[in-house]
Image (tube, rainbow, N blue to C red):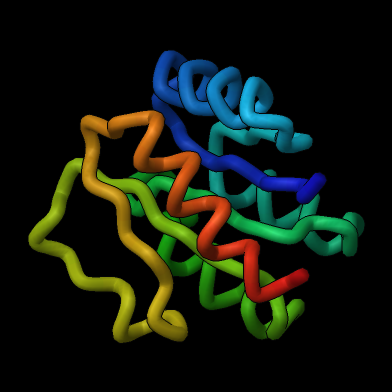
Length: 119
């Protein structure tokens, strides 16, 4: 099953989403900030999907995604945000944006759709 790097500075949200993705059969590595996630990506080429919050302290999700795409152009990216007025899809290759609060069934379905292109 696919390996997902999950990034969110809200620890409760991070654990909630991580558990749901693991229950759906995914391998999930979680980080609470963009800087640590970027460092992890630079040493872990086996990540299939970056699922990141947009608004975070330090490196935000948009900057993380842009840097990650430069490092790994085939990496799939999805965003989560409570600020739905933001439209990052135009900035980072048409990435899927999920609005918080998340409906876990929808999130898992969208993750599967993003990863289907890998198969």
